[in-house]
Image (cartoon, one colour):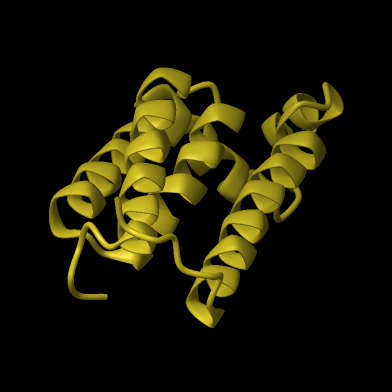
Length: 127
């Protein structure tokens, strides 16, 4: 069994990126998508500036794009053994769960986490 390495700078940057993506997705959902008043404000003429990104996020949610993106990144991280792909898979997987794409989002985040831990334990030689 390989020895687990200590947390390095790349790991801390990865955790920071995951936190920023996850908290950002949650805050956007909490502030721009969930409140009832945003539906009326975005349907009225002269709508606020947040309506276009809100519409894009809802469309991506409907298309399951967050979950599939996380899954594709997770598979790539697992196969290639790249930390940054694992970080993106975990971060976008969290965003997918926040946006109700949980099935594929969790699978992608899990594969990203497995790849990241594989890097930490020496499964992958490079990275």
